[in-house]
Image (tube, rainbow, N blue to C red):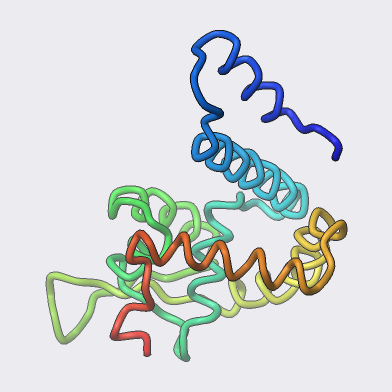
Length: 170
């Protein structure tokens, strides 16, 4: 089997620190590297759109939300696994560029709604085909059975963190 960058790090670990092969660390390092490559690929699709992958994640979550395609900042924070402050920072540019609106919740003055605009929806719908092609390319070495197995293994790992579907989404 061909060796990857992490194999070299594992060898360095054994040489410098000793002990058993740090398999959990090797797995985590591969996941982090893959996430980095996938994000770079997505950024390549987004060049020239005025948004980055973090903003695109917001737009995707809003696009797949039931009409009227809106979520609270708390829902976005949970979905993106970032702080409410990070959501606020992402919102500034998206509101400025007309891709989302932020409006008060008439039922709860302490909360607000982030709503996808028609311009935001058009941008997402235009980018989705290119994004799907781009994220499919690195998966090409895997058969469909391997892809499904990999997806199921990743799901198991996420569930070990109690990363379940929120009750209000079901």
